[in-house]
Image (cartoon, rainbow, N blue to C red; front, side, top):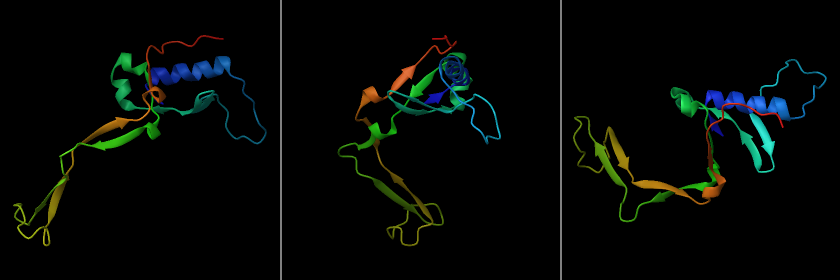
Length: 130
């Protein structure tokens, strides 16, 4: 779950107001800030992304991403191009045997196998007590 700073704060407040929590013996720290929570839909790990904090609207936003639903889809008819460069920076004529560097260029896109497994949540501005 990629979140902005405001969304992270709101989700933590929801947990404080609506969850049951226990203090266990032997703990050396105390607090109610969490980065992982479990629901009937699975386990979510919150990651605050700096890009979300660059805009006030994005800061109150969360994007749930199921990485197992994403695949690379190579475009048909677009073979990987391999270019090797020699010490002078020109294209190596010996197929890269004495190349100093080079590039591999592949054209692909993202294939989402299960779109409903991902979500965008906007407007996380305040927590309501249940």
